[in-house]
Amino acid sequence: SQKIEQNSEALNIQEGKTATLTCNYTNYSPAYLQWYRQDPGRGPVFLLLIRENEKEKRKERLKVTFDTTLKQSLFHITASQPADSATYLCALDADSNYQLIWGAGTKLIIKP
Amino acid sequence: GAVVSQHPSRVICKSGTSVKIECRSLDFQATTMFWYRQFPKQSLMLMATSNEGSKATYEQGVEKDKFLINHASLTLSTLTVTSAHPEDSSFYICSALKDTQYFGPGTRLTVL
Image (cartoon, rainbow over all chains, first blue to last red; front, side):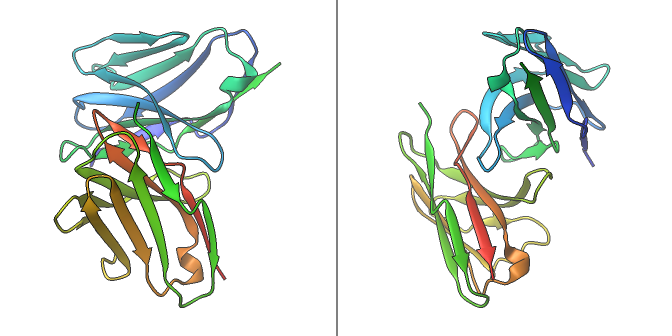
């Protein structure tokens, strides 16, 4: 079955640097992959969706890449700010009924 | 926009009682809504898919008689935890499907 692997250790980044988070999947290549942000005690907030035929997607300071050969997506935040500190979740389509398979998330801490 | 609300945000109840959680899509209609639960530092776990006007589809291991789902309109789905026990204490999150899943802020349930 499909599994998603995200680094369970918190990622500490200095303010102003680029933060890069990794999402690896194990089985079939999904039709699309999504990234969400989750703050403590809150529901996830949709950030970006990238489709299997897209290599890169950008939105303001965010960039997502999708490498179906490596079975990996990278999520970048440039010019990081303390307000970017949160847990970032990777999710991909479960091949049916718009359901998503979720990673456990990576906690990002941006230090001033 | 795509705003989803949940009510209540927090609830504490005694063991054996029932609790109802509401999920509303405020600015769009959603034929499909999803219910998740999330334990601390863990991934979202899909409980069931709720379709307006029909029975919900439950994931394996989720008791449909314990977690009652009603999706009576295109903007409202409810989850009722019946005869709640301490092990039901968790963070319950709903999402509504538009072009992707948009999440509510979550409901923290504590069963004493």
